[in-house]
Amino acid sequence: MPDKTAIAARAKTLGFDAIGFARPTLTPAQAQGLRDHLAANHHGAMHWMATRADQRADPRALWPDAVTIISLGLSYAPDTDPLAGLANRAAGNISVYARGRDYHDIIKGKLKHLAQFIARDAAVKVFVDTAPVMEKPLAQQAGLGWQGKHTNLVSRAHGSWLFLGEIFTTLALEPDPPAADHCGTCHACLAACPTAAFPAPYQLDARRCISYLTIEHPGPIPEEFRAAIGNRIYGCDDCLAVCPWNKFASAGREQKLHHNPALVSPALDHLACLDDASFRALFTASPVKRIGRDRFVRNVAIAIGNSADPALTDTARALASDPNPVVAEAGAWAAARLASPAPSKRVRPTK
Image (cartoon, rainbow, N blue to C red; front, top):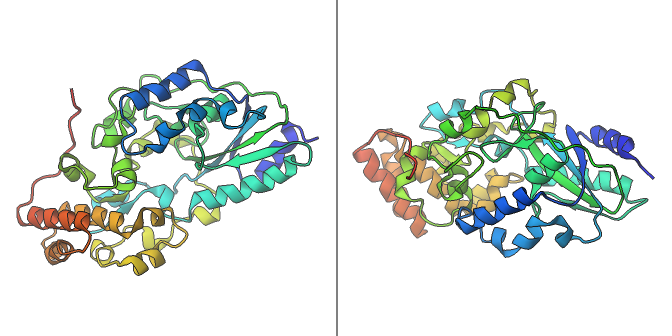
């Protein structure tokens, strides 16, 4: 029967950068945090969070036979400044995590190999952001890091750049000590948010978050946030990138996560011309593919409107005639903004 040392060694061989063991329980504060998040409607249109909230708040409700949760982390720390592309307003900025292959596929493959090693002596289930599993609180319980004031996991060794996955198992293993919070008095992540998406430390209102607005939000992006989005066309790294703990992180080792050059500062005029087929071709094996062409080109239109580049006016006007009404509305907004540009600015927090 494999013990913790053997499992950790196999995980390292498979390329994981962090591993920890926990009981299949959350603290009362962690479970209450989920309930408060949902009660405040801070999950926005992510209705799946509420649909299976009971299982999300109690891992044993998801699988009653689970005795141990093995939490695993894979570093995707960039080797260059993740915010450098924000200065080039004629190009789009894609979040660091989405510039390579889809991490879900990569981590799931590694988890299955590790699960096979364990399954000789116990039952197992693997999860990678595909079930009602509160990955970050569980990772904190397993000692991988703590949920920072930006609500993302922070590791003393890997900063804010860890992909997470879990193995639930019937194998009884001694839990690791939970990680302590080391944010201290730092508020860098909160101050960095362009849309003031944090109503308080350790709280995120997804409805104001650029990652949510450009990925999960299905309709027109509220106008109050459009200027602050800048050229971010898929996700946002601002709160992650400014975390002081990143100075201890080495660049991620997984080759499949290394950036596809075509997805680093791609030209907005090229992206605006994508039809469904060319969108799928460009983003094959990328997490960007899941949002579909229309939502993505909507984001591109917003970035064009923020570009202050008159050369993109005809591109914006063409998008204003797009068959998709959400894209067309964003294109019309972009054309109007290019005709009468206004300075980009951060959104002030709501009172």
